[in-house]
Image 1 (cartoon, rainbow, N blue to C red):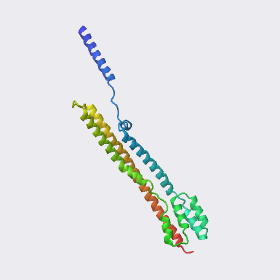
Image 2: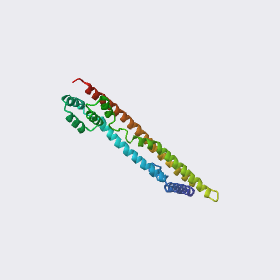
Image 3: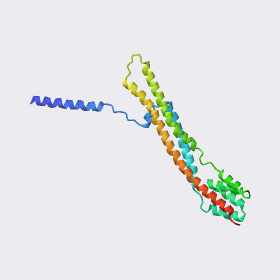
Image 4: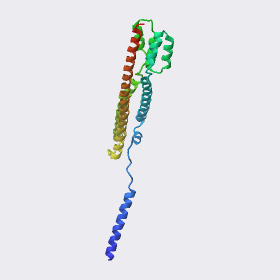
Length: 230
């Protein structure tokens, strides 16, 4: 009987010790983008600035292109009526009140009425620069991964330099892993920025193509208007 009680007490103590060991075991630190960014050094700061700049360019161009696709369906009809009536001043004022590239284009063409048709068409084609800023976004998309690789190479060079400075010739795995971790973080950061910038660039290019097709349609419509018999 006493032996059974002693056995039960030993088992209970073992269970308590095991539970305490589980409680006292520190939880492993989870990894996230913010944690990785803290190990990347100055290159991560550069990548963060490039990302912020790319986001600014994307939003600015998106707003401009969104406005460019919106236009009054009666705009060209009103322009036609003004021109047929010889009321050029009213047509120009209507273009100035309408905020989109088509109106700017038509306004430029109206100011060339009376000149050779070739001059009118050239004036229309030279209005606006819808691709402003896209080159910078493309540069960020290409350059950010290269900066990330540069950070990786610099981190690896620093790691092996520290190993070479160790006189004992013994390098702890934890120290080596930490250095390599810091080096690889910049590659991750560079790829993230580059991928986001690439998608942003391709999306904006598709929107620019859409606006350009719309402008080409308005150009042909305006040129046909000028060629209509009085």
